[in-house]
Length: 95
Image 1 (cartoon, rainbow, N blue to C red):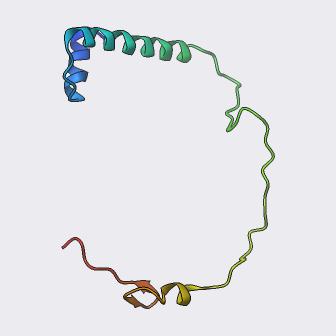
Image 2 (cartoon, rainbow, N blue to C red; image 1 turned 180 degrees about the vertical axis):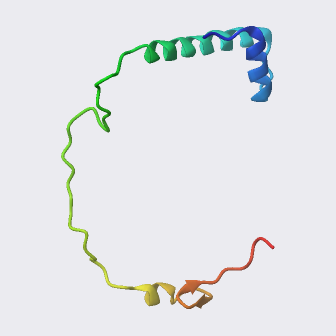
Image 3 (cartoon, one colour; image 1 turned 135 degrees about the vertical axis):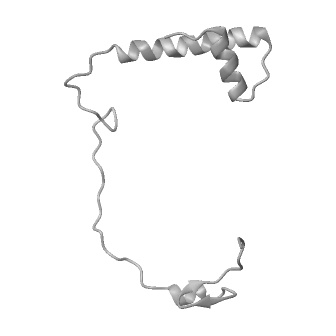
């Protein structure tokens, strides 16, 4: 797939870019290079290739899912201007 000059002008308009003809030509060449790369990537056979989250095998350090701190809500809310039923009260912004 490649873009023509009209498509590049339309994209520039949609992106609200004011490009002169030389910039449009450069953008067209860059976009066509990107689209060519995408076409090359899509042509690669990836059947049987498992997706991976990281290129190297990493061992994750896990910890026990346990509570390590006590409930400090009252102490944390002591300095708040307004609190009700454990919630911070803030002024209305949107009416």
